[in-house]
Length: 331
Length: 230
Image (tube, rainbow over all chains, first blue to last red; front, side):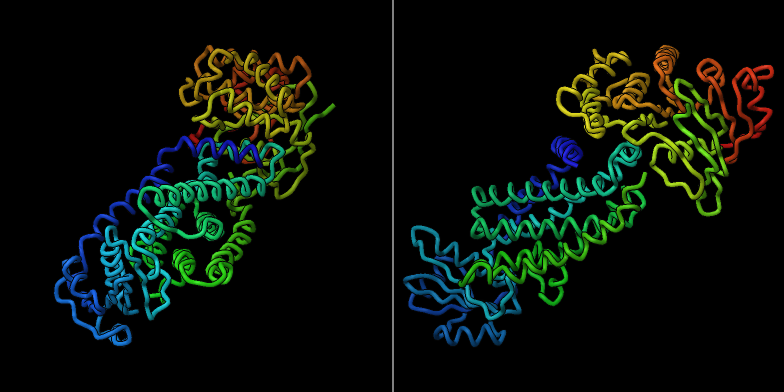
């Protein structure tokens, strides 16, 4: 199994398409989204401002039409009731953004605005408060964009490894391998393990580069590693499961592409989506897990549900994949 | 002594009977030619013999997979790896490691005349070179049974001659060879015995001299007909 794995990884390392999907596209898109989202609030967004430094805040951010709000309590009432999308509570010590649960994009933009206000020389901390517990709303924009695009393209990158079985079939090497003292299960496990390693390597590069270059903050490394591993296992299970029902590499790639795109969009990879929809996707739980890491309390409590859901997806899909090894690993 | 014995072999794909009660044996040091038109069931039989496919009925008494060398009809090689890397990988699949794998890789490279190009990517090989490497993989494990499925298809006369010479040398060393080909002159030159199959059944079996009247091709056409199969 190790030999097949090493051979596959060597081939994948030389595959520029994989490099593009696993690293270049996610980072490039996260960078572009970072540029475009810094342009200002959506036209229909309604913001309020409160606190002793409200006037200075309005002047420095250049936001017009900010509705004056009496205090933080009033801000919570207005945002909670949906009258305002978000309220900036500005004090000499920092900025608190109180957002409406119904306006995730406007809240995210408000966060960006607050962060730009808090940049040096002011260097004031920004605290985001929302009535909703949507994880994606609690990540800063840079991390959200990096994580969202990372998990979106993770599914595409892992797709290339899975279709390696079809490539072996096309080359005739699958029949040759099966004529040797190698079981179907060993071939399948090697492909799956290669898939997981490719996913982990791509995610590691994105976490590192987005942290160093784009200023993203993913969270405590060990906790992020656990979450990434759980997400990669879920992705491996799902992508391989879909491939196991396909007859050709093209069919598998098409199905996997649809799955990756649909889950990416519904799971909030590019913009926040209502949890009622997103919770059916691993993308949502990955982003939710990252967001939970921003909260207080023990890390294992924050990560428990997202990691369990992701591992649950893997636990449900991988046994089906193994059961279908006879069909999948057939010349 | 028979190295391979096939008896009553049957394989169907839904309504299509690919192999229908086929039986034959290949002895030590013998080259046995399995001849037949396209769709006769040769490749299915070979796939069952090498353990890639399971038979619906019948028995196959063959050496374990560790002692079978298989050279499939298609070039079952990794084009982005070099010839040497391909051989080292497949040697590993047979359980060869370290110095043993290196030594055997060099031996088979020498045998098929590819040492000079061993570090080139297989994708850059000519058709004949790739065919020779394809055969080299089948020899890595020092098999007692070598199964060659149309190993000379689409190669130039020089490579074909080199391949046939290699096979003759191997049978001279005691190897049992199961060989399929569409080239009757190849079968006449190489095979000690041939079996002519069609629609999954054995039509005739014997030495090329016994079956060939006036030659093997005439016998083949007489037994399998002249209608086009593709």
